[in-house]
Every structure is written in structure tokens, then in C-alpha cells.
Length: 226
Image 1 (cartoon, rainbow, N blue to C red):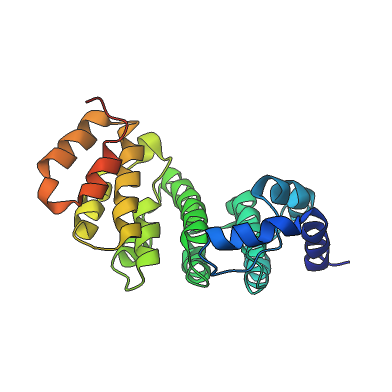
Image 2: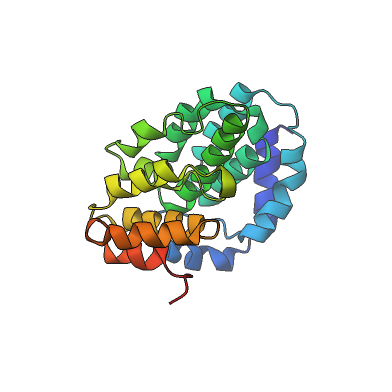
């Protein structure tokens, strides 16, 4: 059996058909599901994905693209699991391909998963002395708001590596947008940085109250002392 046949067999064996309809409803009926919850999905495919150790980036992305084309949403999640597991094979030159995948069947689940992968690739690039925001300036200005969300979120979890100047500038660049997913992303990104630099985030939000939506401000300061 080849990889994709084995993944299909593993997911179908783990599926609980009774879960499919509620999962589809939760995603506003935009996608069909096999009915495999995330923990069971990861367990079912872990060994198969681990067997790809050492795979080259082009083959990795080819597998991801093929998985992305399947109608059931779990396959896009498996693609994200695979890319995350083998993200060390990816470099900044692969960011456009990752962003291209993210735009296909885009919704918060796949977009946020891809934001984490893009962020891991760029943080690794930063630690090697490279550009930690490669392609993110363009993504921040992209007509597709899902790419703007990825740009806003790509530093999640960077802690001391976070470029606060870039983060704050991005928040202001997107601050007047009406899109819920952008407003939420601004608040989430600021709140994440507040774990490392609470005073800086509080000062930024207070200084720019008119340029940030109430949702963004509320999310940013959610865990800050009152």
C-alpha cells in the first residue's frame, strides 16, 4: 500500500460516523467529515507520518497538496499534522507554497494550523540569522483576509524572539478592519505577547484605543491585571 492508501485506511478505521454530522455543523456545514476527533486522528496517522522522516520538501508539499484535495476535512488536518511534524525540512523559500495551500478551502481551523507552521519555519530562519518575517509583509497587505490573519498570528509562541515593533505595526495596519477573524487575530497576537511583555502590550493598547476595535482590545488585555 502507498502512503495515501494507508492514511485513508487508518482514518476510516478510526472514524465514528455519528460524530460526522456534529463536526460538520460546528464548521457551519462548509466541509464534510469522516467523524474522526483530533486526538484519534493524530494517533491513527502518527506512525505513518513519522515514517516520512528525511523526506525532501518538494515531496512533502506534494503529499500535502494531494491530501488537501480530498473532500473530507480530516485530510487537510492530516496534511497540517504532517507539515508540522516535518517542518524542519521546510525553508523560507517554501512559504509561498504553504500560503497557497492555506487559501484552499480556507477556514479558521486550517488557517490557524498553517499560521503555526509558517511561524515555526520563520522562527527557525530568524535563529539562523535570516529574515523572521519573510513574505509576511506581503501577506499582511494581501487581498485575502486569511493571509492577513496568518501574518498577524505567525509570531504566536515566539516569546523572546517576538519582534514587538513588527507586531505593533501590524496590529495598527489591520486595526480598522471590520472582519471578525482579523480583529480576533490582533487581540490573540497581542495577548500572546503579553505573556512575555505585559506592560508593553498594555501601554500599546491604551495608547491606541481609537485605532483598535473593542474586540481586539478586550482580547489583548484578557489576562492582564485590572
